[in-house]
Amino acid sequence: MTDETHRATGDGGPELAAVVAAGTVDVPDFPQPGIVFKDLMPLFADGKAFRRVVDGIVEHYGAGTFDVVAGVEARGFVVAAAVAYATGTGVVPVRKAGKLPRAAYSASYALEYGEATLEVHRDAFVAGQRVLVVDDVLATGGTAGAAIDLVEQAGGTLAGFTVLMELAFLKGRERLAPREVHALLTV
Ligand code: AMP
Image 1 (cartoon, protein in one colour):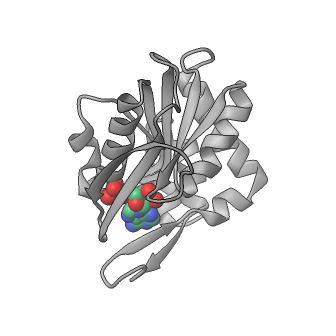
Image 2 (image 1 turned 60 degrees about the horizontal axis):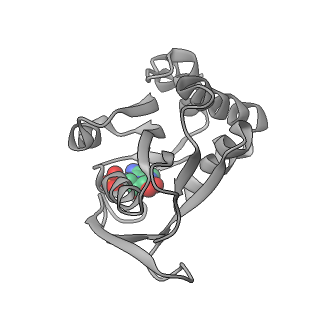
């Protein structure tokens, strides 16, 4: 167990935070110099750890508090699909520009590294449907803000926003306030 795993904290308690920390590899200078990329692939590949974090998200929100899960491309899809399966809900992909085949809403935003545009199908939600938005990492909050805006534009109601890991120094949580952020690990 590394020091970081020992001291792990997050909104789901120290044990869940430690599971996320243990499944993450820091990759310095990816995708560009100065960025430490948080690679969660080892967590996804570990069946026990993956189930534990998905269960942690489901336990936090409770059965019946959301109708559909929106996952942000691409790593958000992995978690969103598992949460949806575990709760008998559906998945809506929030995709990068140009990938959706039918009429879509778009939102552009600045990333920790670069710029991006996200899209969601205009008919993705039934009006008032309660949507849990899921991504892997919260950094500056630009991605999450755009995803939440798209959900609301398409008629959904935000039921929650959850990530496996939050990079607190980039203040994404503050940017998204007063919306609640649930992060299993805060670093
Ligand atoms: P942001 O919009 O700045 O909050 O960035 C969050 C989005 O970019 C998420 O979809 C993450 O997958 C990705 N991301 C940003 N920074 C990192 C990082 N340091 N490590 C891994 N993914 C990141």
